Image 1 (cartoon, rainbow, N blue to C red):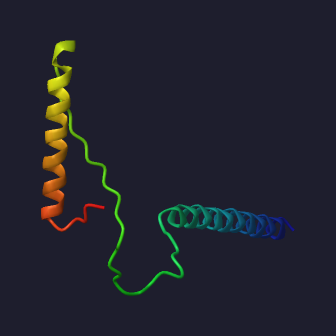
Image 2: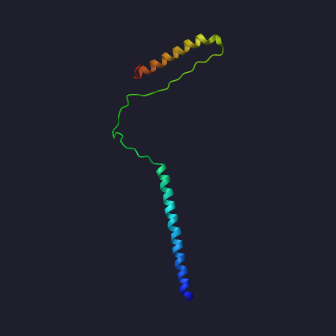
Image 3: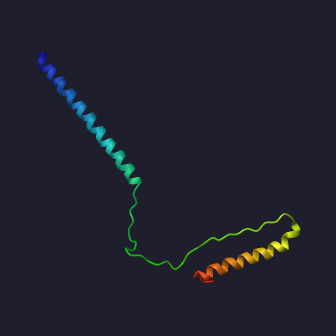
Length: 98
């Protein structure tokens, strides 16, 4: 009779350990799949060929500085000169002035 109880305990222990191991596997797979899903992106409906852009926004900045209020008129002239140089550079490289 004792041997039958020992076999039952071993069988029950095996079932419990199998259940714990399988649940650990499924929890681990779920966590792995969640992490992989964060690193991926699904893109649908975009063109599958290269398209040339016809519009771009560029932010071009320049700075002129002075040390006193008396330099303000010359700073305006320097700023206008720098703006003209930037526009000429862009136009000479194919950017429309408009």
